Image: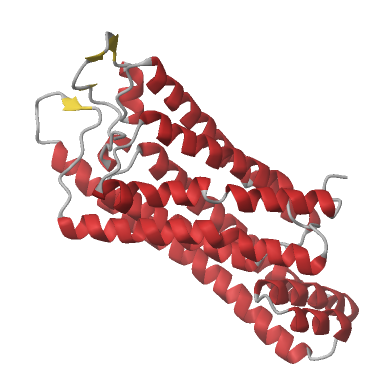
Length: 331
């Protein structure tokens, strides 16, 4: 079973720690990894697993940058499914809360918290480029008409209604009142979800801080992979969040796949994003499997959801990359 350090190991980097046992099959634990990552790594296989986990972290860490830059350079979010972002936002929130409550590996907690930050940035881009920038800039009626059509296509694709999408493309400036109302709701929802991300992340950090304080009373060297006792209630609640997160991740790409299919285009979508997430999820799954897992109640409740949310999405990422190839996204 992979070691499950506490959230406090992500915060308390100053005090020394030890691993128990100190040696496994003649290999002593890597002290630097134990101190900074809260993980006890001994054997070459464990070191390989850790290195693959770092590769996964790097892939996830830079995956959203191409999409954020593409949105900025195009001054538009047309083509990016709003449904995809909603699934990812709540998946990341569930991942962070579930990881903290069930004391998962530090890399899982870091990835979830960092992705929430990127989610907030992307949601603010959706609100800004989808409505606020043009509304505040008081563009000319002709310019507004064209961009409303673009926003209509984005809204229609996120609601997965091909009929509405066709009407949005054909109608031009018609029905601008109802369109503006929907776009207003999109912008408001984007900002509201972004604020929700920040609030829930703050609550999660507060919970981690409480764990850290509870461990500071001990004068004995702390175990690098030590974890605080988890009540059955918090454990089951954390598992519930983990399962919700895993299912949201698993189905998240379907909205973008349908959007691409209806538009017969991947314009506005960074395929590099999905290449990196595919690589990161593959590395992440291999990392977990290399460390070895015991298939028991805890595995099905707390560990399998994360594997489902990572390796389970590989088929969908592959479909998105295939769509990019079919629709000329690699030209």
